[in-house]
Image (tube, rainbow, N blue to C red; front, side, top):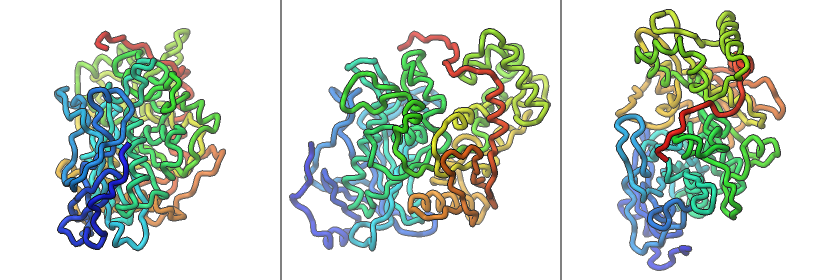
Length: 507
């Protein structure tokens, strides 16, 4: 294991006279560059800092190992390549490299000029555990707040989550990469002006689920002190693969229970079992969803005439596949059509049995699909939220659908320009500033937590009626906004088993 670098150490007073900042880590010195935040605040960024050895050769499919030490100053002024993955949204070509275990640090103050250490926020990206990269998430917005931001790469897909069920490949390598990065933060972040005793982990989608997995793993205990899960936790449909890691190709490379006894087992039981047994880190947790999570998914359905026209006639075959559930074989019609008709009559959910020819009908199926698992969990939350601001028109014709869909909250937290441009002095600009401030305030332990002046109530243990903070402008507190959705799911008479799927042979 690498040791602290003690040779050729520059005095702190000399280090910060250099043109670019240099910081000492346990493995060597790194030289970063200066940046400028959204509101003109100067900050320092260190991009592509090694936190683990390259997972290649004999280290492929293995838990991460510490990086080798280096003697010279390492220039950390550009992002590292993403971890090897397929371009799932387009051509399917291979992107990235296997040598990818690097992190990035953004800090408004370094150790020598910091009056006090700042809270640390560690962001974990999403991407279905199949894709993603830290280079999409910079510090331009969070550097207006008094926090240190860390983003990190971790292995995805087969290289990150293959589990053969034996000693050959034990699984969860990607989660163990994240774990190694959190250990790096504990050992090194002080020199970047961050407080290792005030670490908040946060993430969206698979990143939000990762956050929850760390709360459930004894391996991560003590490495973080607060948590934020956006649009996912360990109970969303990622977990269906936990018990059946080789059921089908797309489920083969996800977090799994490690059945082989070993000191580094990350997940030892099903998340529900761990929660029911109280086997999780009892840290403040902020969790929530966007108001219409699945709008971006139904765009694919409704803009394809062939697919859209086939949904009506094949309803009972398609619903189990789309929802990832079995319908009870004894009464499929009762299990779906009657409850759906009842909820439609009441106007409590927007789920339609339709054909493309009927322009009056919508099919926002995924508007409710991801919310079932949230409301099924019996866990003590700190704060719950719903983002209802972006009002993105996913489809304009023939089905105009408007709402905040999955990942619409990310451009409000991170600078995605030129992909997404937020005009200064616009409502989106104000919303973005308020969200970043709220996330940072949570990390800073500010109580009571507020959004745009609205005080956010803490959820009490055992509370069944959830008070959500509605993240919109002007914002406000709403009681159980998903109650109708919850009732809808309960009425469908569904089991929690995996839906029948074609078993692929390309493993």
